[in-house]
Length: 353
Image 1 (tube, helix red, strand yellow):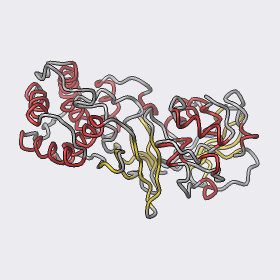
Image 2 (tube, rainbow, N blue to C red; image 1 turned 180 degrees about the horizontal axis):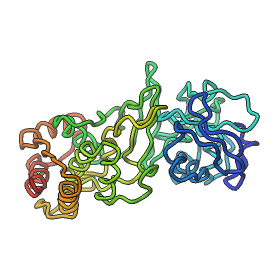
Image 3 (spheres, rainbow, N blue to C red; image 1 turned 135 degrees about the vertical axis):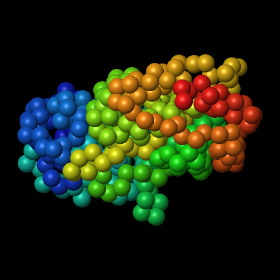
Image 4 (cartoon, one colour; image 1 turned 120 degrees about the horizontal axis):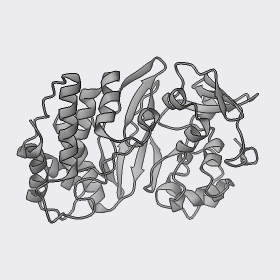
């Protein structure tokens, strides 16, 4: 969409919300109508098009994003205008918006280059010489500087962070996978923590705000997960959060994968860079903290409410040391291995078996 037609966040939109080339909802002056079962969960639950659109936008407090907006002629600090410019297309789902009477097709919205990758991830002094207008960075959400890079036909997300954050991200992912849990694999490349786009063609990542708003209470989430058949996977997710003390599991950092037919699964565990020792080594490793108590309360609630039978993942000191070795080899830091072991195992030992 040309910036001259984007207007600003106050301009009402009329057209369709699309899933590939199928219209899944009609929008008239920002009002949602004719919603189908294949529409975004958020739209089906809340019928709020402006909020859905806003949530698809990149965090414009990231300094690199503000430079990209200037280059593309998009009003500064106007996330909705940026999303409209990209037709609301994203690399993590197949939704987009088609203005009324537009001839656009899904293929027109598919991202085909990463010419703004450097500008988004680390800053590019040559950005104002780039002629391309299409970029996935306008819908690349999150507060850390990051960028999508296309390599051999696959998209990879490169995210910035300090050495402790990179180590924590990789450790949490490695530990979850060693426990046999569903988690995105991360590694370090060129000073960034990197992962492949885990959303495959035909699927959409729909974030937790779509079904839980911003209610992060474990018990409220457990209700929804039980109703939809994902309670065990959810408990596995928050079990890992407790062990590594992930303080950043907000409504945009977990979700579900959907197809046109409906919800398929809980999304794999992703985004753990604000866990473990991301901002230094705590003086108290005993883990008598709110993470453990909240998990115990949630587990007790699920067992009583749903007669839920849950066996804790088989965490052991050897697995923690294996995850540590993997993480420190990929993201070298000066962190005592025994401190990591104590931190994780103390949390595990305080969980109600």
